[in-house]
Image (cartoon, rainbow, N blue to C red; front, side, top):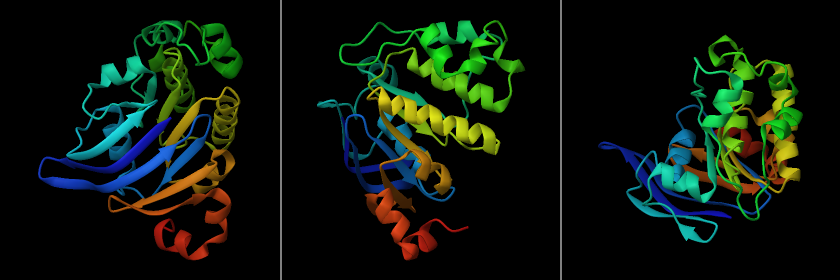
Length: 233
């Protein structure tokens, strides 16, 4: 579904990513783990087109997308949930959802506000509440719901558990597991290993812009040396 090969990217003269290669298969949840500043967010931004790669390739559903604009990538069915949420504070929950609406996509789950309120019951209780009057956890749910309104076949989630209470983190994990049941491909970046263990099938670890580990979550759990070297604070 999503394949990245030898991706290099920079901000101006500062090179951030070095030959990053990873993949996420259809219906799979894959996590990109790493410390703050390791290159996780830059990787996702490069996949969606917010950062222009210097070299390498990104293939989504059999099509090269590394030279497309973000809106073109989104129209192909790759959704993106940014770390800073970017909800429309002056719009209601329903209005935020309408902003994300795209036509149904063949082979992808079809999302409506009603289905999303089943996935996020809290949002269903505040349809007319403005985004700026919602808690951080509620805003995170709204951002994901708005992305799903585009009926994507794959979603990039940038640090979905950051800044959330333990209870909301557990709810967010349940949401991602439900998305997997819908055969949605999910690639998420995370610092929270516990959260990753709740949802992911496989993991990549990135450090100073390079992939340092690739394997199943079970293999990562058994590798104390890797966790200590790249994930410990």
